[in-house]
Image (cartoon, rainbow, N blue to C red):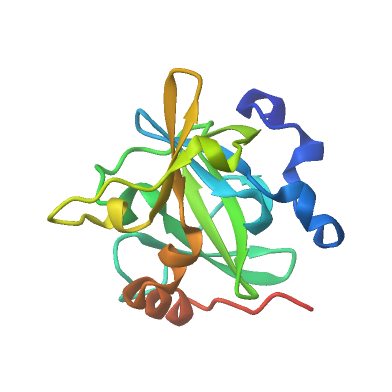
Length: 180
């Protein structure tokens, strides 16, 4: 399957440019989980890959699907759908893995489909709504981006990874530090 079917060209798949971080400010990679569109700051994205064979790791939470070997690196894989307490669904040819680097640790997130890279100015981002009972999904929302008539949910991927339960699980699954 070609990357253009996902709305992201091969050139966009390698997204991190450490030397020009200002150009990454307010840019997000958007993807779908169910009916909702979520975004992760582009500065955390290493690449987008097709779903591949995932080796299961025993005694992990259901949302940690296991690990993959990506060019010699063992990368833990988290299904964001399950991490957000949403219903599990069968993976298809649009399902992909968004490989991120957070605090020098590589982690892959399974998403239903990748949409696009988009810039949202800071003045178009509102704080997340506050609810009495906070679900896993709400706990990881950094803001709500207003794009035309729609709202895009911005994920604080650092909070997803730094969550004690998630951090312990991905560490046990074999998260490796990224090379300097």
